Length: 154
Image (cartoon, rainbow, N blue to C red):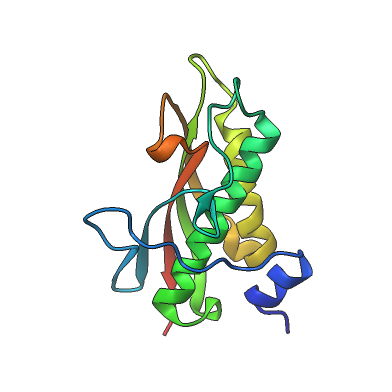
């Protein structure tokens, strides 16, 4: 039987170290069987992988890669909170933010980078409700940010 972490390996991906909170908050909070994950940026080795606006410095394709990095960082925080990705029952909801030029209308295509990864890793349990919103700026100039709600099992 395939596990979420073996799926990541099959995809040629690995979880980064869980990113530390960058302010007065914690990376995740569990209440009941839901784990609320704070916004994550596209980080690797403590540095942003993608900065700038989609439609200017970034393309839809590189923006989607940024969203995938956000998803990997979220999964790193989920694993840190739960001990194992095997405890994820379902990805419930993803809020996606895209740093983009005024009038940008392709936020869903960018946030698909995160959504597609969740489906590849968790199968049907990775399908989720979602919002994908273009904004005029994100922390540290990041290209994307996601927030995720995860259903967990004990």
